[in-house]
Length: 251
Image (spheres, rainbow, N blue to C red):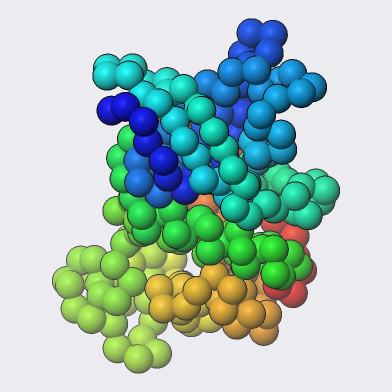
């Protein structure tokens, strides 16, 4: 407990009383943290624009023992993403990403890989905002993987045999992957294009994944979006609170 300094990404804020905000952050060293920023709603305050959504901060906070809400003492901007916040579609997508991080990540549980993945997706989105849909798919795949809910993409979930090159892969009712022999005609066939992009996401950065997805057909993009959405809904036992809109753009 005590004073902590760490990198953090602002996910969302809530008004508190007349002059304060509750800030929800994903931190590099302490996972999901909720804190109170005293006086942050006043016209003149020490936080300035640092508490805008998806700003990368050097955050300093104080936490008392057995108290979940921390007290935010200082927030210095390391990387802003203000340029993204003027686009309503991107703003909705960022809210969706933040919502999923909050849903999937337990408070105060360090997950450096999750922090780096979210930061990399934001950086990719800054460089190629036209690739919003591909970056969202990458984010969904990886948050499922990092939280332990993505099925093994390399082998059949029924017989545990590794998939051969160009083998037909199918999706079972539990949304796991299986070979044609185990499926026995009961599963949905996953197109080779969609399966290839799913596997590529495990080896590529979000920026490279988005660039390599440009040539993917709209059918492949919609197929992956439908699959990840169903996987997320199955984990949460409901549809995500915020729903991004899928647009049939080339990237």
